[in-house]
Amino acid sequence: MADDLIARIRLIRSPSIGPVTYRQLIARYGSAQAALEAIPDLARRGGGKPPRLVTVDDAERERARADKLGARYLVLGQGLYPALLAQLDDAPPLLIAKGDIGLLDKPAVAIVGARNASAAACRFARSLAHDVGQEGLVVVSGLARGIDSAAHDGALESGTIAVIAGGIDVFYPPENEARQRTLFERGLVVAEMPPGTEPRARHFPYRNRIIAGLALGTIVVEAAPRSGSLITARLAAEAGRDVMAVPGSPLDPRAQGCNQLIRDGATLIQNAADVVEAIQPARPRFASPRFDYEAAPAEQFDGEAVATVESLLGPSPVPVDEIIRLSGGASGAVQMALLELDLAGRIDRHAGGKVSLRAA
Image (cartoon, rainbow, N blue to C red):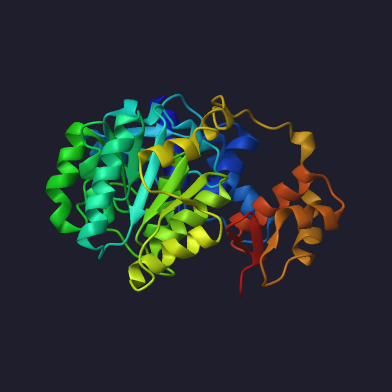
């Protein structure tokens, strides 16, 4: 198990390997070590140079740092990994968690909103989080200022999970250090990035997909148009989860995002009973079994499909399903060709299962 974890850390921390590519490699080769050994040849077949891979020593150092922090790894496809999150196509292959792991086995809702939220909205978020906690729901949020912090505070006694954008040992924003330390002891903190990673702007959308993926539904309390909270709501909808919003005054710009969500079909939320009513039908729908990976039979893949697949790609993202249809090839052969092109650095992957040729 220790060697397998090191191989998985090496695989996902290597610069050219994202969650989708990782998942395809494991599905194709059955183990991280076998995938690592296959990558150089795959990249050459795709017409590129073998990517730089993280070394065993670097992976050992990361694991040792997580161990020293009292954190543990949750591995996609293995027992402790949250089943709802595993359903995402781009589910993080590894999570680092510190706190009460048992919270991941309970039904959850996400509560997110504006960092510069009004006092009234923070009070409502705190009260709502407390009340949904009394209904047996864990509250997931992003440990940001404003609504996120209020939601964690309200659900502290019943159970709350914070998903952070940086490393498990990085306190951001700095004023939330005491709150994060409290959640280490009385809740759960989850990170996708390795320890020591300072959060950057590009990390927050990744964090948002985990928030949405852990929950049966996402509640937005105050959000300006084009805010991160609306990104979380969109990701929840794309994952087939419920989207809920708290209405606000049309005169307050911080309420415009929520009001727009409601106008577009989100469930209007006024209290915890509304939340329970909204997500109740979703519980059996998302009660899926855990899964394991097995190596795919080699005969499913055709190494000569690269040229055909590449000829169908351009600078505009297109769905992989469309590439499969137009190529006339087997799904496995097309996926393998895309994997080779990906490892060769010749394509980019986009949200919604789309791909495009990378600009020269």
